[in-house]
Image 1: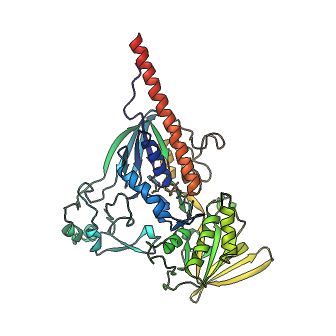
Image 2: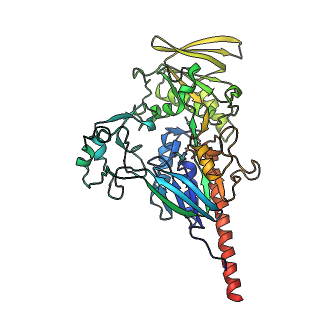
Image 3: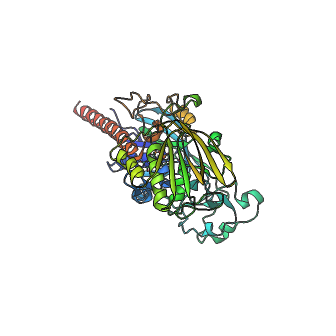
Length: 450
Ligand SMILES: Cc1cc2nc3c(=O)[nH]c(=O)nc-3n(C[C@H](O)[C@H](O)[C@H](O)COP(=O)(O)OP(=O)(O)OC[C@H]3O[C@@H](n4cnc5c(N)ncnc54)[C@H](O)[C@@H]3O)c2cc1C
């Protein structure tokens, strides 16, 4: 008699960006269980950091929050944040996932999310969520909209952990949730299928010194610019440059910083940069009416519904100046950022004195991807992203049965394409679940009849 295995119709989803969230909701809303794991303290991935989204200019948080809240409360979703997968044994329909949950030093079962602990923590640290342009405390949530709305203590910067004195958060917590003795937890979850949704990172600025990355303070990347544009960001939505807080009168945007660059081993197109750069230039002009926005581009790749029109709108209505060409050098001169390049249409060299430079660095795989691929037994491509079984006909299947991939984990993609892939991966899993259930039913009937 063929019985269903424990957890056979439960899916493990690694990464709770918009891809993981969408896949988890699709599976959970079909009546099956999803185990959603993210290594950060809260869900949302990069979409949570965005200000507005192209081409509709929807407020990113406004369209994301209903989904993060649903994920946080869904009866069929087990949410493990601040957690990572450390092992996967078995085969499709009978996997055992080993998950390590980092110590938060806060008992989330007691914490009410009141935020009192954060208000008086004496340690101030550059906030990763704000692209290091803002500050957080040593006890912190990633953002005010964090799901779950529970803080973690960053042991490295916590005064109690480094000096043995402080305990301010413990004294303030009205429900006694601070627990400095908490340990990492390791536990197992039986699951039938897996989705990898670990997304992307931007190439670090320090890897782009020729563009001033890492050594010129007023050279920032696209995600940092998103935080400057965001009403909930470190400047409350006023575009201010990092060095002196001045509103920049001229901003140069540089596309393809490190991508489409075979010499660096990144010949691929990062795909969303043409669109988000047009969005950035347009939103900058909305915020700073007399500001000048200049974009350096190789060519414009705006393939998507309404995308070409969006770029055209930036050029025509917002008078964003597009210069076709390559930038050769970016450096600091006085309090300005000098940009040297070539306008390949006119054949002339150009020199621009900017107040702020915003790079669109290559989108690269998450640094954990290689280790995760090893744990999952997956193949990664030369670009470092997860390889799919058949790019044409099985674009969300990996080479391991029962393991699927969605969103930017398989290569850079925008939100609509990410969501479509996540739903596709969820549908592939749902079809497996119903096939396994049907097989078990048929077997039970056969056994009953014999
Ligand atoms: C500056 C900028 C602006 C953009 N603007 C737009 C826009 O306006 N419109 C649009 O359509 N697209 C935009 N994009 C693209 C958008 O960010 C992506 O389409 C989207 O974030 C992809 O979602 P994802 O879930 O695949 O990946 P991510 O958002 O990267 O999420 C991945 C998640 O996986 C987690 N994770 C990673 N590794 C592990 C691990 N080993 N274990 C557990 N968890 C892990 C991460 O913590 C994260 O939560 C923009 C991108 C940039 C850089």
